[in-house]
Image 1 (cartoon, rainbow, N blue to C red):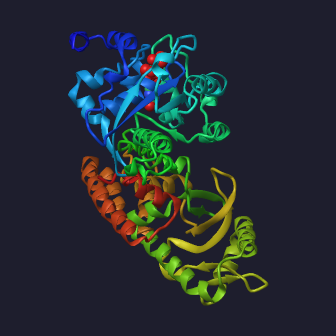
Image 2 (cartoon, protein in one colour):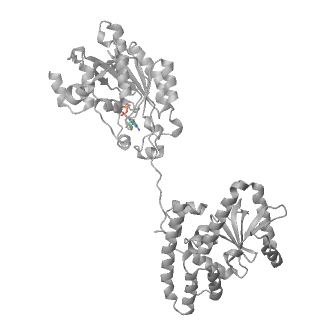
Image 3 (tube, rainbow, N blue to C red):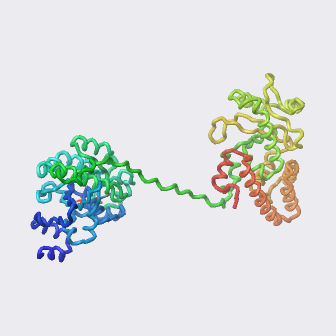
Length: 516
Ligand SMILES: Nc1nc2c(ncn2[C@@H]2O[C@H](COP(=O)(O)OP(=O)(O)OP(=O)(O)O)[C@@H](O)[C@H]2O)c(=O)[nH]1
């Protein structure tokens, strides 16, 4: 009685433990309930492998975050007399395993090898032998030091091997090491043990193996339920008259740990372009994802993007739609394009590039269905006399990508001979951005191309500049963006254009097209 009140008055758990070390006798074990099997379970293992945390997780339901755990290791022993001083701990010791009521008494021990633990081992029913999966030495000591010690002090007690700190197998070790106390030995990824290493040792010793993590709250129940089973089976051999132990199972296999899902990637959508370089017009200078080549005067090639052209010029829209339908209509009969066919087309493009006006005249004079044929009858492109004056022909070619330099199919459109590079670039800039620089030199040429392409707003912008009313062009630019945004949305919804750029625009919410 005197001893109990002394234990209660002390707040230092170590004090409780040491006091009990010197004073505990068999009569202290509270066999207060009939048919309740009190089980003494001793927990041993190297320093800092996680014995005390494991015991607290079972005895006090203590769960801590990884960072609370990391910051707080001091060599400690959880005091066994907590079962006397704390009602909640006593209640949590009670359990029913395989229909047997038990009261599990957990004994924590020092991890230092040289300490004398014979008092703790005395009359133990089961020994939980711990190592850390992040410390290979601690597993080595299981064989060389701990198992022999257990067999020496309690040869008949069953042993359970436990790999603690399992969460470290899946943790970001750099972050863990940063959060650990400054003098703590860093955990190295090449030291993390796979489950097989623990299982091998367990097999060698002939004991069951479990893994735990108090951070992930995994395996704590597995360890102690099965420690109880091992203890009860061993007791059944000695106390064979206890019929309620009949249904106790042998320790069970542990279900595998399901590693936590990695956090979803953080996707940041870039803000809408602000500078000229970031603006879609930048794609004209640096033609990423180009899917069309516009050929001017049979010499100059400009890489461009169908989605920009088609959503700001109905002429281009009709051209690409018509081409896609025509391709679709022909494809089933002809089958998919073979590499050879594409190469033939590449060859035909080279011919076009080199041809002079005379050749062009010949091409214009070709077959009535508008399809150009080479000597073997293969399709070489389609004449576009029915599409007004802006375009001469359209065809698919295998072309070296201007960025990756690897060949890929692109649509090649030969533009009307009257279009010149400088003004045509200004028109393209308008088609990409809705803007026209009022200092453009060749305004009349620009107006001419705008008329051919039926881009009447651009025609109007030219007129405004010529009439010294360039300020009115801002409204046209605004209207351009509203109109094009709607068209892009429509194209994305219908899947009208399926190139790389279109997918990119779909993925990044239309940022490159200034879609709000
Ligand atoms: N990540 C992780 N760390 C753990 C876990 N359990 C224990 N630890 C860490 O291991 C350290 C030691 O835990 P303790 O339970 O005090 O170790 P011990 O085996 O009782 O150590 P001694 O008292 O020195 O014998 C803690 O400070 C934690 O940093 C776990 O499940 N996961």
